[in-house]
Length: 373
Image (cartoon, rainbow, N blue to C red; front, side, top):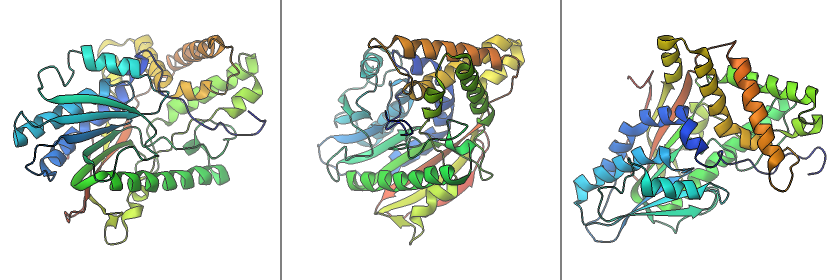
């Protein structure tokens, strides 16, 4: 990589099932969205033919967090269609995704949606959802949870930090623009792929109306650990400078911006747009048992499972990946040691949008706290 050039891609979630085991915050956020998903499935327009009903799970990662939403979608469809109609479930993620773990989850997890479901056929596609993934008018239901917050490209380095919403000025503006462009691109592609009367449910890590994500303290602690590692020589100053995480959550007003003209964008209409706070279950456990080290470990491993693969891309590596693994181990250990002395809950926010293709349902915008309206 040329000096001064930003990384051209971001990492996928940490492999070998690591993300499945430690992604508690995305799991908590998507749980709040499941009633919206069920309502969406009940509203899909489906003909009485015998061709398969198609579900797209966009940004599936390693599959564990897909089991509950896919199970609910399939069960709700069965109530409408009976047991004989075929259902295809396409799990979509980047080619570098850990698909081996995904297939293992689909085959062996006790909560797998195929366990007692006839005529359900799981598939996988290794492609970015910033490209066309399906033929036009092919998908009945699309679900995307905690994936559309990742940008298609990283527009700039970030002086003094690794994540753009912790900075201001021209660098922040570049990320704001990239996020807006990517959101429109994502919506346009899904609009072409959805059937008339289909539904798209998008669950996103969100900023509240004051611009807070709830994870600011965790990001700042991680940033301090990176600075210490650079000063100690575990990573070079240039490696640290190149580290960027391509996540850029948006406020509700930004997510709704494309729909300002007659409430439509590329044939999509917003049926609901709900902001909620995600309770920190690990903090609740800490309040019960007082185990500070357990809480710090959970938070450090959550950060590692989601963000460290992107940071590690800037670490000059050996052929077998040993130096990047060493970086991940040292970073997560140092973050845990830092967090154990500065405990705080991670009260994050989640935005759930339900979009319909070419329907006239009115938009409903509400704000919830901990999933309670």
